[in-house]
Length: 379
Ligand code: UD1
Ligand code: UDP
Image (cartoon, rainbow, N blue to C red):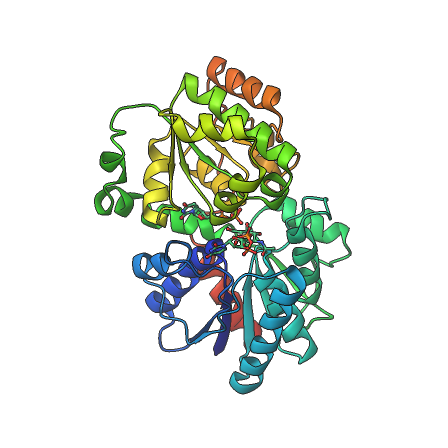
């Protein structure tokens, strides 16, 4: 069986590592994976570092599309992906998550009748002002095999008209929905111990035995709207007086801080010794930080989940989340870009014991399950 895997943005490269690893361990003789990197993320610390560290095979193709507006970026990717699909003629194209690379892969493949397997299907924020919400909906509705990590994802797809009882042969018009667990959980389990032995970030940042908050910010609504960016950084400055903060900074945020942050806040932020702003870190370093952190503050989907995997409370800098289960269990609080709600969430977590972390993201073998279903569907 031949798969074409599309990756492009940081979280997709990390997610793809789980499937590539499972192919190498169990299906090296029966599955050929052709990897296409769209080039959506291109800085070494947003892309190459993950190939070096996670053992992902070198991409067979790199489209080098780089950064551009949504339309331009997606169109460039579609053009390149279509050409590759026509040449490679895979049994399935494998798409991850909800980025523009996902959207480009979905629209290019569906029009030339290459079946799509969507990993991380069914997630919804019910907020179509997010580019990711558009990307997910389009991709799910063009897919033949939909792999949902959570029950909420299955419920969303059912509400949108997907029949959970479809029988093979599966097609774009007779798709199959699977509840399979989360490939990011597979990765977190696999790399948790390796992260401790292979990274020295905790020592390097002098964090041994010191409680700290781990923060990330990159959502376009938070970086591109000055009011929201100012509220978030004002809250982080306040929070850092209670506990030091480590903030690996996404390049989008790095750029937007310069233009969108008030001068006074900027001065306070860059002179603060309580907020450590560092360049994006590797996945192993990120896991090491997550394991050691006292609490996580983030607008990232992946980091929200990892904070749950490593049993840390999480303050979510968004009005809603696709990962509703982690809020429902009481381990994450939606605080939006609202200084008061962020501080209230901190106080709430400080005054209550953690709520317990039931296993809602599978058994750490989602990638193997996905490959089994792909092989089955091809027969
Ligand atoms: C993208 C995804 C988002 C995902 C995030 C993960 C879309 C619409 N958004 O957002 O869902 O959560 O990736 O990180 O696909 N930049 C660099 N170097 C890089 C990459 C980006 O400097 O290697 C800067 C550029 O200024 C670029 C900006 O970051 O314009 C945004 O990059 P882009 O890929 O368009 O969106 P993200 O915000 O990264
Ligand atoms: N991540 C990383 N280094 C960083 C920040 C995040 O390796 O400096 C990892 C993080 O552990 C998670 C993934 O990147 O696995 C999340 O990606 P991101 O926050 O960029 O996007 P999202 O998940 O919101 O789409």
